[in-house]
Amino acid sequence: MDLSKKMRNADDFIKHLYVHMNELNQFVIFSGLTFQEFVSSVDQLENLLLLKNDNENEDGSFNMHTRLAFVEESDLTKFSKVMSDKKGDLCWIDFSEEKKLNLLTPQEQAELLYIGHKNEPIRTPFYHQLQNRFVYLEKKDDRVTKVYFRELNDVNELVMTYFNNIVQAKERAASFWRRKPTSSTLAFNFKNYDEVREIFNDGVLLSVYRVEKPKVSYMLELRDVPEINFPEEIWDDLNTILKRQPNVLVEATVKK
Image 1: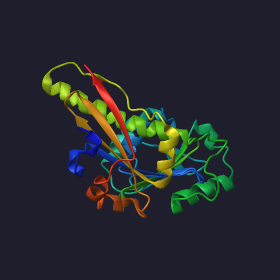
Image 2: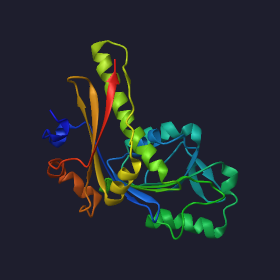
Image 3: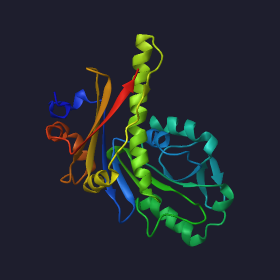
Image 4: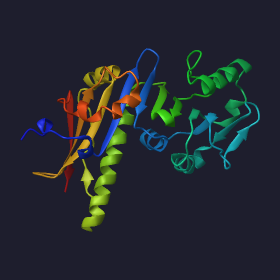
C-alpha cells in the first residue's frame, strides 16, 4: 500500500508544524513551535537579551547599560522550562557575552527597544557587537512565533532536529513500555533541500506519523498551504489540508 495515499485525520499524526519563510527579510513564521522546542532544536545558544517578557524572570540577570534583563547560557534550560508554562509574549535576541552589551550605541539600543515594542526591526536585526544568530518573537495568544535568522540554512537544521527529537522521544517512550533498550533511528533528512526551501517560501504544513508494519518507520509529510493568510488559521482547516496528497514525503526507519 502507498502510505502517502492512505487517508488520515489530524489525530493520526504525532505532531504538526507550520513554516513560512521570507527569504528577502530573513525571517520565518512558525505555528506549533514552542520556545522550549526552539531551544532544543538549534545549536547551543549563548545568552539571551530579553527585549520583551510579559512574565517576571526572578532568577535572571540585569544589564545596567541597556537596562534590560538577560538570561545567561547556564540558566537557559531552566528558563525555557519555566517559560513553557507561562502565558504572554516573549521577545529576545542572543548575544555572545555581557561586555558586548555595554558597547551598544544609543541608536542600537533604541532599535532593540523598537523590536520589543513593535515585533519588527527598523533595519537588519543582526548586530556586529552582539554576533547574534536570531531574533525571536513569540505571541502565545496567536500561537505564532516569528524568528529572524542570520543564516537561513539554519531553518533546515532546526526543522529536521525538531522532528528528530519527536521521533526519539516517541521511541524512548515505546522502549520504556516494552522494557527494551531504546532503539536507534535513522534521522530525517531532506535529500533535495532546494525543493523543500521553495515550499517553505510558499508556506508549508509538516506532519509526522508512525508506521509499525512491515517495519517501524516515521513518515514526514510536507504540504504547501500558500492560501493561509494568518498562521493560526491553519489549525481550524487542518483536516481539510490533510486530505490533499503531500508535496514531499520523507521517511526515517527505526533500526532494531
